[in-house]
Length: 287
Image (cartoon, rainbow, N blue to C red):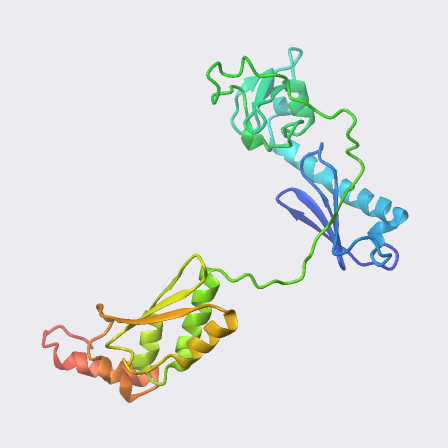
């Protein structure tokens, strides 16, 4: 609690996240990055992070935890990764290479060993992680000799939080995976016996770029004259068009008509096993 306001403090991929009701504060792993304050609305007096005293205390707590996490990271690394020698040579904490000059894959920046060690091996220009820092610019023809020193904004106030408004309301964003899931579920609603249920599970459902749907139903599992009413209703609710067709393919079990006699999977399984047993005359059959 800070005053009357509860919060949770989490460590996620070495970032520190403080979360309250409708607000959060993120202190990135990168020591040179600004803290990020997120709320679901502009300043309307509802959220405590707009109170300077609350924000100062919250940032202090989050930064204290960030310092501990960064210290733990440094402890796991070789000493030479955070302590340059008299020539400015440092050792990459992941690759083990040693150099006084380093290169950022993202911004094509040339970085000194002292700079990169002080910034916990994040690019002081663009903030790229240690994964993108190399002792040679292998992506350049001259291996980085023509690259300029990384540019940093000396006027940038890294202590000042970056306020952002985010809309965290749940939104339905239909895509091929979600549409397919709903249509197949609706086909199962339409199924009245095991054969049709297998047909729903076995159906080929294709979603095009406009989110319209093509449903191919196995003719041995789904009656050719039966419309999938529930699937069409769901498609209408989603505002998408549906095309139906029948197909012939290798079905998972023989005698699809057995599935028309029951809606119980266990009963169908027993009937299917008995039917297979009649055609299996092998002496070592244990069924």
